[in-house]
Image 1 (cartoon, rainbow, N blue to C red):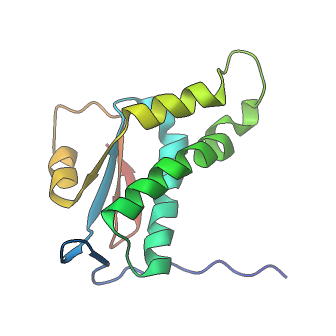
Image 2: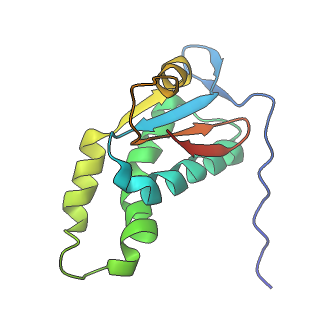
Length: 136
């Protein structure tokens, strides 16, 4: 019998140590390209699990984890069905495109960007307390 995955429960506040203690409420990944939800949504879900598992993470660790996770999440969730087929580009070129073009925002900056009515998609955010990942 397989181990049942841990159920994620929202926390009152997930804290991290930086120059003091602050609450990570919102994390946004802005790409301005709608084609990569299959990569970035599960990546943010993994970030939520990591925050929960570690009882909080610093912004620096979250950014490092996002950049490190892009290759795996792209291959596993977006490219796997067409792996090696002509016309789908190389993994390295796509990963380079993603890592060079994303912007990672936290808290107030993320929340202001989410409310930006001129944005036409291509961005995803994680509400840390609820664990909800949404496209905007």
